[in-house]
Image (tube, rainbow over all chains, first blue to last red; front, side):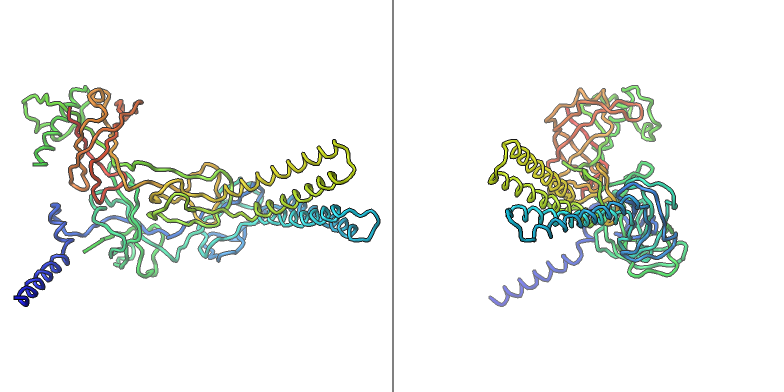
Length: 256
Length: 258
């Protein structure tokens, strides 16, 4: 008897498992979608990262060291503002430090009527003057624009001699070696079938070739295109095909 | 069943539009309308799915972004750091202000011990207070270089990257509570709004999910908006249940029973 029970239980588990292996197709038919689970959408090729660089202070551009198309590395100097005022501030801070140092040295000399507070004050003033040099140097460094990442310069919007304001975009860089595909017209009905990590195939018109990729992001906010509610879905390419360029059109098929 | 119901609703909608005297758009279903005048009570409106709460976050200061700690889709909790600005200058200014305070405090201590006039001591005391205030002010500015999430939720937009410059008020991150969605009507007209009351039962059809959910009116806008020349009022509906797959911005059709 026991053995029969166990066999029955085992069969039930197997049946249960076999049901579990096909829930996707089951739910699709249930909700009444006639077509297969695949979602097709128009898309375009875009860099994974676009960074718009600007200065944190206003000023006049002294030099621009890169041009459109140049490859840059993290930490590379891209452009600089004129810094004469800030250079002078560093010199002033240095002179003040020398004065504070002289006063501190004077306090170290053995004298009559020496107050311990005077020595503490002189030391604090010297430390303060040292810090003021550091501040002036950091301010001076704000006239230099560095690249935060390895990327390619895609736009230069300032020339030497021009004045730029705080946060006015001067140089735009993008990771052109990390291109991805972003859908433009994936509808609200289709978005319900898309999951992060899902496999996708990408047909690039210009290259007349198909590539493999994976869904990496689904926008939580909708856009509207011609009255339709659409969601941007981002697909990362498994490998970067030669000849692929920013802006190329693509057709993305997600799922089966 | 659902389909029949919705066909009836759309017929009512067409009639309602006609009754409004609106220049009726050439809807193809007009020809399908049965001649029997439907005086059934109720209001129909188009609507969108919206989160119960969302915030658009910006800095109050100018600065260079040192790191962006989140990406779109991340879950965040209240108080979590989202974006950090470069703080090198402000940190140096804190140190500088601390040395300044130390010098002035020592000066005051010296005058308290020393033979000095009350006026000299008052001046020294004022100097200490002023230095302390400057230190506090810089520390407060330092706190403004960290953008923290004011609520738990999901990152729905990130409009900033490392190395970029932020300015006061420029929205850099949007956080929304996507655990609870509501429905907000987009074209409920001024003619229909008197028939709507808070607490009224609503039937909501979510097109993308092909699903009907019940809910309740929780808010009626006090101020109108205009939509294509029509005066409309936004009516907010709380859903009785939150179906899976619901997304911000999805289209919905709302039917309010009288």
